[in-house]
Image (cartoon, rainbow, N blue to C red):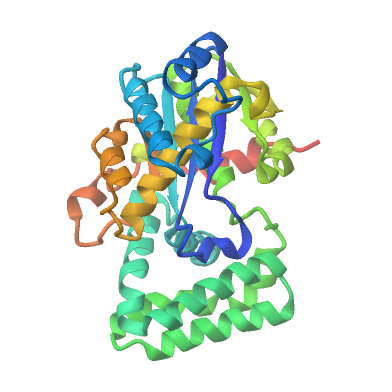
Length: 359
């Protein structure tokens, strides 16, 4: 069993705040080489085609029509053939501020921020309310300076972030919201210790997307599988750590809380990289990833008027979403209730940290 992966919308670094590229998508598919080649030959390839690439196909109406035909055929596949993960990149920056800063502060006080989805509720509240109460430009500057601080980890970038955070805090026109921002400022004395455990890939959505999809495939297949991944710098750089999370020596357990529980270790056998020109399964994943990125960008930027987007939207692409890291209006109680169970389960980060060993 081989699962093919390909990504779209990842420039990394400061690209996380790029409004022209607001989403990251990782697509995965469970097709054999024969199945993948048949899909492409019947729906995408022409006599001149040597490789199926979404970026080339979407440039004209003929290529767009082939994409729609291809996805319509994909939609007929069983649910265990395609899984996609989408990250709203600006919202992800907010979740990382909560995870890397506020969670560390809460942990010192004996509070597990992941229980009952407190981290998710806080992230959504900050995402929606901070621009309103503190000003959009100030808020975006704080987000960008956070990205730069994690990337550079020098004194100048640290000072820039906490100055930007202080400006946001001081500008708040709501006292309750100001109190929610205070823990961010309170992490300044411990920031050097926090940063020493982070690296240039700590903010890259490719890593958590890959981890989540591997966990999902393991649960669906209930057996080990091989990974075939198109060229991905962050996955290549973190290959050793990710493969350590696949170790057969780790006691198998259900970790996490509520709907976020996953089986660990991952059931993948390792990560193999290949060129999509030489493997039609990766080409299938490429067209799926690009299509989802185009569709999700239209939602993120509220640009849903072009004909191609409308046709994509009519395909009910949501059925292939394994999960998404996407902002939820904090007043939408129904959407947040799924994270507020009795708190049973275990802290996933603690379990993985205690069992994953890098040789």
